[in-house]
Image 1 (cartoon, rainbow, N blue to C red):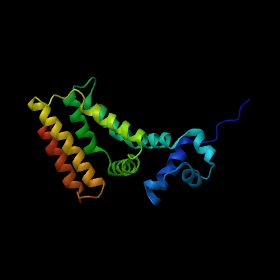
Image 2 (cartoon, rainbow, N blue to C red):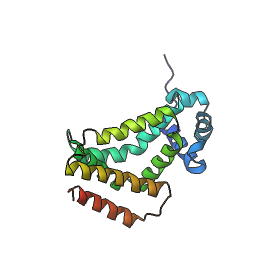
Image 3 (tube, helix red, strand yellow):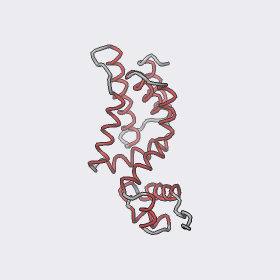
Length: 180
């Protein structure tokens, strides 16, 4: 008879979040997470065999709110413009803490080839099939790039963007796309 599993994935992710919050994203390692969680490195690797697997789980955890809003806005089988509209809506409505965490972790880890490639693929999926030869396609592309620009400016601390200004920008983008 086997021993019951005693390693809790959520507690490991909680420890990784605490570590990043207190020491920053560059401090994230299997050893540091193990120490923060009070378990062995092997205990962390039982649930997350690699740092990349841990990072993917953190992105998944933090992106859950975004994905729920995106799916609700996009609907079933969205066309390219609807995917962009849903991205604008989900980014604007995602909570500030999750956005800041995701931006911080992304900035630190996009230097790894695997993470960079998966991020590129994610962005490409948001614009896939968009036709910039049409007015609607150009507006959607502009709204997508504006969404990412304000996100980066705010969450990388490059510009102070108040919550009120954030909401105004996203209302403007939704109006541009005809989704208001």
